[in-house]
Length: 187
Image 1 (spheres, rainbow, N blue to C red):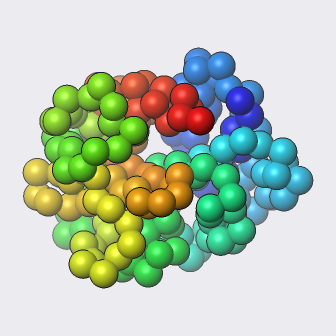
Image 2: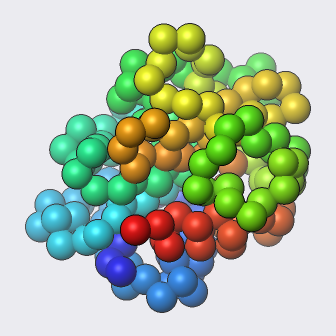
């Protein structure tokens, strides 16, 4: 299994790479301003890493989604999830209080392979200032929320595109390795 990781200049990117390597994946990492399209084409799956700022300010992030959604399985983490939501017309809102290095309870709201074998509630590490607003007309399914009802995971019902707002690679996310295992194992 070969995985392309789009690095959005986040300090957690190589923690994700470590988890992917631990699952036996060969990983190619490109920064979001240095994307080699041939490298993306050569991979089986794509991870959109966390990062600072907004999806629209993240160089080739939105282009990678536009060019590969429905072509290759995509997992978005934090900023990556937000970018997937924006791609599908969702709106980002600024949190009134920044959630950096904060642990929250995640509550599964739907069935999805990403959460197979994971309890209905689990702890996760948060590092974000923005969140996606619920929209009744969104094609994306909300598959997890936090205690306040904010979207913590989304999935497309027909193609393999999903994402999490929390950081599975954080020490605070007690089911993080299982989430990565479930994603990498899905064929």
